[in-house]
Length: 70
Image (cartoon, rainbow, N blue to C red; front, side):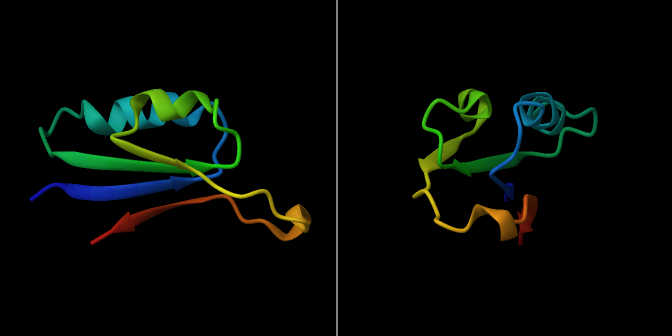
């Protein structure tokens, strides 16, 4: 079974992180999910699944994180 990781509102550097995760030396299979309010987010190109999030009025309290979904 593939491990699943969700990148939420990351920066464009996530593109390189996702590639490193997907093409890891251990051969572990991952499914990558990405969400962001910007539909042209660069890392969507390397995600297996991506969705555009709604813009929020109070962005100042936003956390940027990646989840490993068991």
